[in-house]
Length: 276
Ligand code: AMP
Image (cartoon, rainbow, N blue to C red; front, side, top):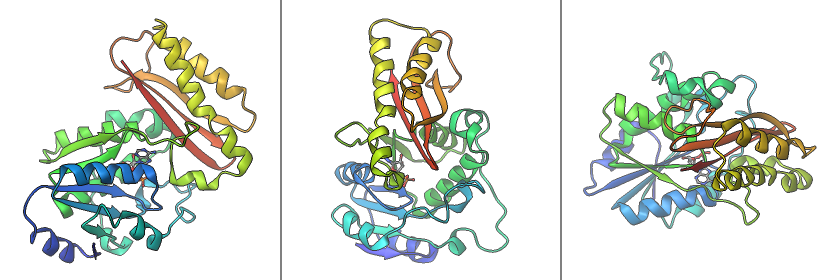
């Protein structure tokens, strides 16, 4: 596995390779969810590139950038079996002095995570566009765990004509249903137990849907009731939205995204199910 940091070294390495190239963008502190993306890339591509970059422009001023967990040595050990090239740019390489260009997807970023985290997706789409331009992969791998991110990146790829296939991989979960996340390390043992409430509320709404319920409000209320019964959880939003437009639904028709953000003190967790 080769480690590069500058755009120059990245492109020298990239263009010495022929065949199908896959990219897995990450912010590091890797877990089974990230590795599932890399395994899929390994199966489908001749060369797997992994980027590790904690992107400052997608964090709000009150968010956890400074204390976002990092452990590059451990990350390198974990990804070695699946990765040919790991790209670890510094902030100065990614955003040199005088940097002033941004990529913004307009409508899809007004809802859900975009509404709660102003500027977040502008940071995400900008850095992902730069990762795409740097690596020039044939395929890029993202997790369904970040459902709106997937929708926004697909839109960007369509709108800006990136010749890249976006591959979406299922959410990797702990045995008790909690979605794997770098932020789970912030949870104390009590919060960790309580955090299964996201999965439990999604599962209850899914069961209701499968029994024939098509009222968006009833599904939202079911999730809210279950989250509300957990004293350690403070819900930020609960949504039952159209899968394509991300607009809240009164009546469910077609594919639907159930999603939520929940705080356990300062730790913010998100999760979602896609139905239909
Ligand atoms: P992050 O390092 O959090 O930016 O995540 C990097 C990529 O891994 C993103 O495409 C995430 O959606 C994906 N990812 C994170 N957690 C999971 C998970 N539990 N299951 C599947 N993919 C995940």
